[in-house]
Length: 126
Image (cartoon, rainbow, N blue to C red; front, side, top):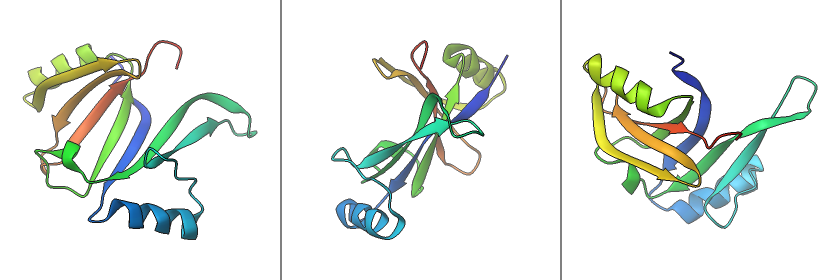
């Protein structure tokens, strides 16, 4: 079974999300959108667009709970239900909650350091 196939997103926790977003926009040129983040489109080695993107977001970090970390990484996966079952069988701390929306399927696991890891199965063809 395939496990992680790429990074779907990086989420940063900030004391003052608006100020931190402005800093990244001004100093690093990240095109921060109204929703609080940016979407980096994937390209191949020739610079040609390829399916997929990586999200980048700064917020208050409430969705990171129960983790106290200042970040959360979202990893793309091909078979979320299968991977969650395998992680449970391996004794990992898999959170019971899962979500499904037009953006795909989401599940979470805690790593041994207490970081919440988001697993994301994109919609078919995305």
